[in-house]
Structure formats: C-alpha cells, structure tokens
Amino acid sequence: MPLGLLVRLPLAVARAVLAALRGRLGALCWSLAPLSLPLPLPGWRRVSAPSPAAPAGPRRERDDASPTPTSVNYHFTRQCNYKCGFCFHTAKTSFVLPLEEAKRGLAMLKEAGMEKINFSGGEPFLQDRGEFVGKLVQFCKQELKLPSVSIVSNGSLIRERWFKKYGEYLDILAISCDSFDEDVNVLIGRGQGKKNHVENLHKLRQWCREYAVAFKINSVINRFNVEEDMNEQIKALNPVRWKVFQCLLIEGENTGEDALREAEKFVISDEDFEQFLDRHKDVSCLVPESNQKMRDSYLILDEYMRFLNCRKGRKEPSKSILDVGVQAAIKFSGFDEKMFLKRGGKYVWSKADMKLDW
Image (cartoon, one colour):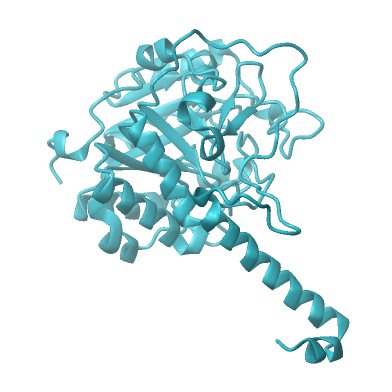
C-alpha cells in the first residue's frame, strides 16, 4: 500500500492494517526459524517459549539419563467452548503454533522415540473447525507412521465429515463425559445450551464404529458425580477404555490467586474416589487414576511445545523443544517413567492391534 494513501486513512484503519502486517511478519518469522537467521527482524521476538520464572534454587534433574518420550500429550490450544469448573489446563493464552512448526516439533519427538501422540486442549476441534488437528493426525499417521494417534475432546464440535476425511488416520477418540445426568453436566460446566451432551456421546460412538476409530471415555470424578452409578451406561457404550480420574488441583490453573477456575468445591477425598471405583469394579474397561498416579506420569507439552513439570503442584514449563531440542527440554519435565508404566500408560494403543468388532 503506498505510504501517501496510508497517511490519508483514518487512524483506526491504519492501525488495523499495521496489526495485520505485523501478524503476517510473525508467521513469516516462524517459517524462517529453522534457517537460523543471523540478524533479528526489527520489532519481532520469538514467542515459541516465553522464559519461565527462575526457580528459587538449582533445578534437579530426575536422573542422569533423559526419559524416552514414548507417549506425549500435546495441548496445542488452551481455548475451549466449555467452562468445566475443575479444568486444569485453562484458557490463559490464545496462542497456537503455525501448522508447519507443530509438525517440525512432532517429527523431533518421533526421532526421540515417541510412539503415541495424544492431541488435547482446550478443545482441539475449535481450531479451524477441526482442520488443524485433522492435518496433524494425518501427518503423524501417514508421514511419521506413529503406532498410535489419539484425540481427547468434549465432542461438541465434531462432525461426521471430519471422520470421512481423517478417521482412517485416528486410532482412538476419547470423549469427556463426567455424568449421564444432563443437569449434572450443566453444573460441572459441560452444558451445550439446547444440545444434549449424552445424546451427542451416543452419536459419536456410532460414528467411531462406522469409521473404525476406537472409542474411549474420560470421566473426572468430583463432588457432583461421585455418588452416580454409571455401570449400565458405560457397558452399553462399550468403550475400549474408560479412564476415570480423581479431580486434581493445579496451582495457577484451577486453584490459587492467578487461576481461572476455583475447583476446590469439586474436590473429593481418596476414600470417596475408592468408593466410586468399588461401585464400578465390574466394568472391565475401567482404568482408574488417582491424584498420585496422574501428577507425574504424563508427558505434557503446552501450546509452545514446552514440557510442563507438575511435581510442585503447579505447571513449571521447560524451554521449548523447538528451541533446545527434545532431550534438553525433557530433563525438566518431572516425568516419572516408572509411574507411567505402573499406571498402565503403555497398552495396546494401535487400532490395527485391537481386533475390535467395528
């Protein structure tokens, strides 16, 4: 745009034009990052990994050897269309990596030993109406040839056309369902307005059958559903796994002064959790995870591809794998590989090996 014309534009319009140009420049810088440009571009700084606050003392590594990132959970967005009161990965930023940068990081993880990738959020299907996560799923299965590719979603934004386009590349779709009572779902924050979360769950179950995707259910057990009997509903849906989590507090996410949620009212005791598990002990696909098992047994990547260390009850980020590499970043992940294996973190996770009756 000629400078003379820009000067004559109203100030607000000129600012909008400049903001758009700056956004395009930022995307260009991301695409040029692998080239290691010797000079920084004016007015731009890399935002892949904001520097975490310095710890009070020296950070201790888990041991001399870096753990292998066998199974990784990539929370590529924090944005969500639900407002679950106990959410422990809240919408603190709106950042999402450019697609090619995300692919570069995934290829680095594969090179470091990753066998399974799980895409989560936020809500993964919010970004580009599911196209972003669809392209990542296809890339991981078709090009990286990962044994297992999965997604965790609330299910509200998934359409059949997505299954038609990307279903063949997806091994497991996990849908979050905390109750089969719609009033309880509304209390928790999973309300869909006029839509019914449970009815949608059954629709997604049918699509998984039709498009040969293994179906999984995730439930967070909390003060509002701990007395519920879900035996009949879970058996009728017949998921390959029913992952049952104990409601977990994470400082800065769902508890504390800088948190976006106040999850204290959702917390249950260990005894309450055990009673819920005992009531559902005859459900063969039940996979329970207490707070102790959850806290350090997941490798979590945030939207900047930083590993998140939860050992101190809050999420402390490493540097981004895009900046320092997988081995350097994973040393600060706090990942407990032994607990990962003890909780059954490695299982038959490729749909080709499940021998399911679609």
